[in-house]
Amino acid sequence: MAYQDEYLRSLTHPEAFWAEKAAALPWFVPPKNILSQDEQGIHRWFADGQMNTAYMALDHHVNEGCGEQKALIYDSPVTGAKGYFTYQQLRDQVALFAGVLKQQGVEKGDRVVIYMPMVPEAVIAMLACARLGAIHSVVFGGFAPHELALRIDDARPKLVISASCGIEVNKVIEYKPMLDAAIERAKHKPERCILLQRPEVPADLMPGRDLDWHEEMAQASPAECVPVAATDPLYILYTSGTTGKPKGVVRDNGGHAVALHYSMQAIYAMRPGEVFWAASDVGWVVGHSYIVYGPLLAGCTTVMFEGKPVRTPDAGAFWRVAQEYGVKALFAAPTAFRAIKKEDPDGKLIQNYDLSRLETIFMAGERLDPATFDWTVTHTGKPVVDHWWQTETGWAICANMMGLEPKPIKPGSATLPVPGFDVQILDAHGKPLAANQQGAIAIKLPLPPGCLPTIWGNPQRFEAGYLHDYPGYYCSGDGGYKDEEGYVFVMGRTDDVINVAGHRLSTGEMEEILAAHPAVAECSVIGIQDDLKGQVPIGLVLLKDGVQVDENELQRDLIARVRGEIGPIACFQQAIVVQRLPKTRSGKILRKLLRQIADGQSYQVPSTIDDPASLQEVEQIMADKGLVRRSGG
Ligand code: COA
Ligand code: AMP
Image 1 (cartoon, rainbow, N blue to C red):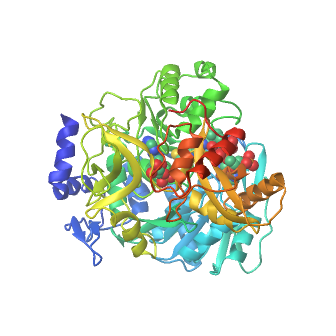
Image 2 (image 1 turned 90 degrees about the horizontal axis):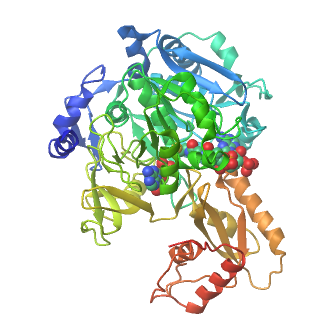
Image 3 (image 1 turned 90 degrees about the vertical axis):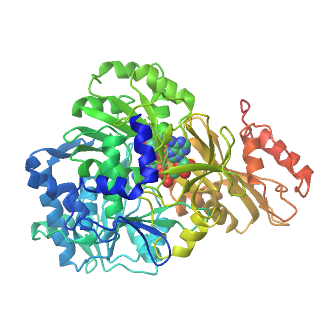
């Protein structure tokens, strides 16, 4: 009953519930006003609390006598570097780098963009911003200059922190030219860039603009923690929406700290001193919450891994790291396990490692398909917990609460709503649906602590994108159902967002890029199923009248444009020319139908279709190109 009691209490007495969870953290001024509403009517948590997230994550543990405990372990199979920082060492590095930022005039509320690979300095930079009350915005290294420029223009940072290069499997990615190109493109020009020079490829620094990380650190003095209000922003993290303009999800300080601290114990069953490993990247929300803030707030040891599940050097990398550092809980995207399974189908490499300290494997970021679930359970012998969340929420909406009361696992389900999340399945009119009926997954307001209070600089987009469709609810953008026991099954996005290798991307943005090609009149990008990456995008393009192009050349051109504008992680590899696109009479492209065709699913031709023959035509072309999955259902 532990789960049921806790869950009900979180919904019936949210203020008492979250006041109790907040009391477990070291506030400068503990909050009395637990739940309130701001001028826009948005719920805010702990509005009168004063605190500092970096203090809670580092200084507090040092003050409590845990300074010698390992805070951050880093392991980089691509460079051979390995090491760790104790809580004391990490606190001191963070305080020093905060001093560097302060010296450059960074103050509370200023934005700082961080464009870095998976090196400990990325974590130090994030926490140093938090220490000063500055707002960091980390941009994933796999994004191209255009994407970085969009974020720079939206966040308007005083400063950008980057590195000379990142290292992918067998290739070095130079960051500096991408940073320069982004700043060139952006209207907003940051005053300074601080560059971490890596020995693999040092960068030329631009005099007057660029500073060297190590040189600045060598002459810095540590800066103290700046108290902030719980409702002050800690970070902005951009995520894909349905258009080419990413959405700046804002995370506050207080609610975030309380939610993540609670989650570490209640969801992940982690206690202080234990080792947690989120095999993600600091550029994604999983990295923010569970490489950096969650484990440190909870006094755990976190692992930062600059490598891949395969090819660095082999499919045993996860098990090697788990053994070497005594990882208790491993968290990664299902695609990582699909990659391992592909290279080591019988799990032979797993046998080479002692995984006795690994208790649970958590997966999120995309749908966990039953085959990957079964393979991982069978070959590791560990419970595999699927949990569902989004950049917007910052922590799990549905999970199997391993630290509260583990429930029987149902493959395909993210189990039950996490305390604080009143999850409902709604029909098109906003009416709750009965068990086993599929609809929009919505969360009744207020959202619990940790979830976004707004979109950076654009409260209207927050209202229009999440709150407008179902008054009184947050609309998740995912569809699914609950079974008779309340287990939640997340079936996929209901909008134009796709998930490629656990990376969230916008097909709308790709369409904008394809449509800008001089030969293209109209286009549609859809996500189709992929055995390794879950989904990959394909483009269907309609040429302008009279345009003669070589289709292969056009495809190469379009692929290069998407790669150049969004980045290699878009994995856009296929564009096919069609004569017509199936549309409704009002001119809307029937994307869902196209997806169903590609996935080999049965579909119903809607009565609103303009020209049914266009559908058969497209289906034929897709089948000819081998783009229709045979085993769908
Ligand atoms: N910086 C620069 N380039 C990057 C990058 C980064 N941080 N991350 C990926 N890329 C590049 C890759 O090198 C690749 O380039 P290529 O087209 O020139 O080969 C391209 O982007 C596509 O990358 P990816 O989709 O990751 O494919 P992959 O074949 O390199 O790896 C997996 C496949 C499954 C191993 C990998 O996607 C993976 O580990 N996924 C887990 C995802 C994850 O952790 N998600 C976080 C949410 S929990
Ligand atoms: P992101 O914001 O990048 O974390 O992506 C969030 C989206 O990923 C969600 O809206 C879902 O579509 C998908 N997602 C995340 N976790 C899961 C899960 N456990 N099961 C199904 N889909 C998931």
